[in-house]
Length: 538
Image (cartoon, rainbow, N blue to C red; front, side, top):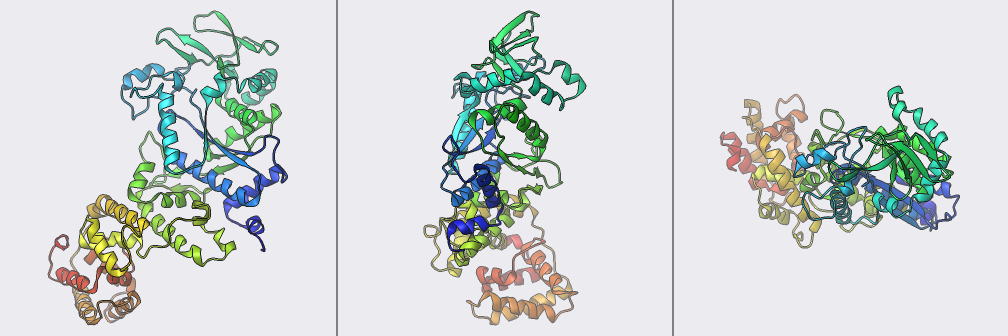
């Protein structure tokens, strides 16, 4: 294609497919509000987590792709549902006993998160505290976004017009909503949660109640309070909050949201909220349903179970770019999210990064790295893979960055921590991963007689090679030695090298590893194994 825009129109990568769907929605013109609005949601009952990252980074990738298709301005809102109540006491807070009084206890609802004191005492409320953590989280990754709060939107009157529309269409919306709930819930189901003051704890609650009367002309509902008395209250100004599926539709309509992703578990909610949005006279946003994360046993990731990986945990063992690659890949397929996937995603990122300069403009649009960095990665390729760094740490039994840099500088003389910041990060991550996941599982075994004979020959062959032999030359000799001994196949030979020399069941391409680790060092490693010495002494 002759232009960048034409190439983008033909790109097959999923962010471009989503962007073209959004462009079709606009009919190629700028919406009346002057921009296309992307939205991501956040529930501040807990801290930002890996799902928060995934939703924002994927939405950002679609937004970046959209910018290659058109000059229509865009905005990204990260919306905090901070008027919600707590469904349970969070696991990671102090003063847990205090929070027991604030939990949603139907028919009494929960205390709004922005009405609960911050247990750490550093913010106006617990909701404000977690909102601040969200902004810190977003800023740490350099996301371009605008923060918006449910509390601000409701209490400022920004949602008032749409709240009154819900009241006008109350019966129609209620009929749509009731079709999705069970018989018992229908008896008490109402579209609005009115706010009352809980005298026992001195804080407001939004309670679950079906109105006795709806008054669209006055903008109010009448309901029976916990004390049995009838109360009339406005639905505007934060005096009422719709149930969340209605609330989601209200937000789409009031803000003019054009695009929002959601998980597979919310498919039915998307359908109902979209129906309500149309009743309100608005067009629901374009959507994208992503699959959920699974743990190593194939079970759904749950923060309460603690069976997943937190963002900070991933970032302790690998660069953020590798996590972005994980989020980019096959978002509509359920994927296992556990620590063993980290090294592969680091090396896959490095592989894609190395390809980018050699690819033509159309091919680059299909490269995940283009989407991770909006077409402009800050770093070039690195001379050493993450897997090799792990195996260097394992072979040398080190947790010292200087030791790894000693090997690296010999292999790539111009590489330094200052000149190669990405590689420097990888060294630190590799040592952390080695310490926590590789080292505890290292299990060396003694060689068999067949393996001893092959290892002796390998040590002799390697000793004849020049110290700076290329990886391919070393790999050739490894194959030749393996062929001369009665192994069932060469895979068995290399498996033996991993288990005997590295103490692991899997390992690197041995020619590359030996070139980096050093031929004399590898010969010494083999001789220690043949002598039956503990490899941990190496």
